[in-house]
Image 1 (tube, rainbow, N blue to C red):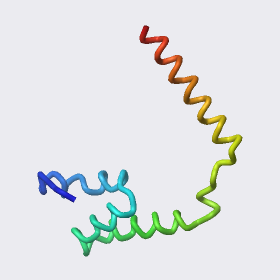
Image 2 (image 1 turned 90 degrees about the vertical axis):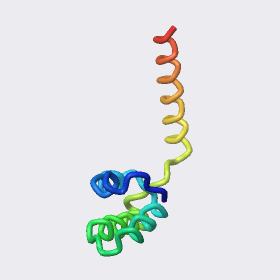
Image 3 (image 1 turned 120 degrees about the horizontal axis):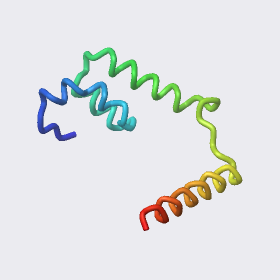
Image 4 (image 1 turned 135 degrees about the vertical axis):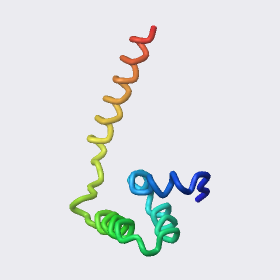
Length: 82
């Protein structure tokens, strides 16, 4: 992880971690090994990722419905631009 502005990164690290994947969180934790908030957030992400009740795969019909809705929205947006 390359940090250009360390002072600004320190200020915004908690906000930035919300958009990080597990690998990035582990790297962040290595930069701030004593930070309890980062450790807690990372362990909660791991717990939720392993919870089958929390993570549910879409059935094929559900996935197709989501895709068709997105395609329909994209077509409407394109028409509104023309």
